[in-house]
Image (cartoon, rainbow, N blue to C red; front, side, top):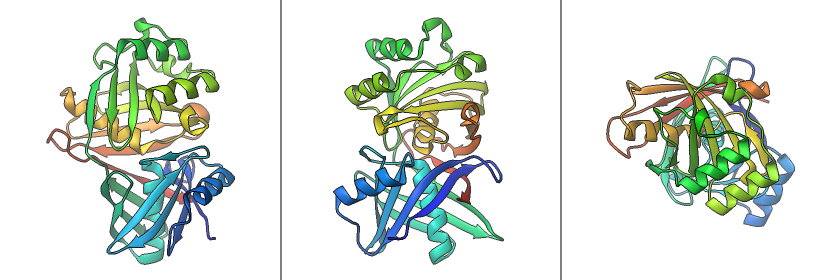
Amino acid sequence: MDIQRLAAFADGETGGNPAGIVICNELPAAEDMQRIAHEVGYSETAFAATQGSAWRVRYFSPESEVPFCGHATIALGAALAMRHGNGAYPLELNLASISVEGQHVDGQLSAALQSPPTRSAPAPDDLLDQALALFGYNRAALDTRIAPALANGGADHLLIMLNSREQLAAMRYDQEAGRKLMNDAGLVTILLGYAQTPQLIHSRNPFASGGVYEDPATGAATAALAGYLRDISWPHNGQIEIIQGEDMGMRSRITAQIPPTPGASIRVSGAVRTL
């Protein structure tokens, strides 16, 4: 089986989040996809097979299947562009229909996805207190302009915005305790962020639910955050830039374009490099 290895949301020739990509005529059995994802060892591996005029896609972390993965979708878009040419490709996920547009121009790879619809709600106090305790924060560390929230742009995330870049850099947690909290709450990741400006946000994404301490670039969480910022009328001016992975030596860059319609799909894009 041909497994491609690509880093999505790269920052030039470095950074980005590695993903495994398997393009095949027919999807393997779920247990085989889970085994392959575990062997690849990246935070996600995407499996894609033609289904009529679209591509059927499933995503697996080393420990579990996830409903949607942004960085693996971006990597898949680049892989499809290399194999089938530049353009937009419709994707059928477990719970949504989306698309990804891949570009391979002058040796440079990039892709942009259209996320599933977004939604958000205030974070329950008990869940917030558990998360703050997990990371060693208290409520004084929070950015009062952006209240903690549960947000979804294809998968569920807890969003916690902090009031300083130093607080974000200091993030530490016990992975097993984080796994239990995320699994009990049905979360894919917890996004911790700091808004340097209304349009430039630094983020970190613990992904203990998938067996990964921290993700260096998370497109699904970015879509969820972008949808939430739209819901609270944050002055994003239609676009935000995310810098992620910097504190783990894998600086990544993610762009999210935010249309004004509540709940509408977010366009998430970035560069891709081969590994």
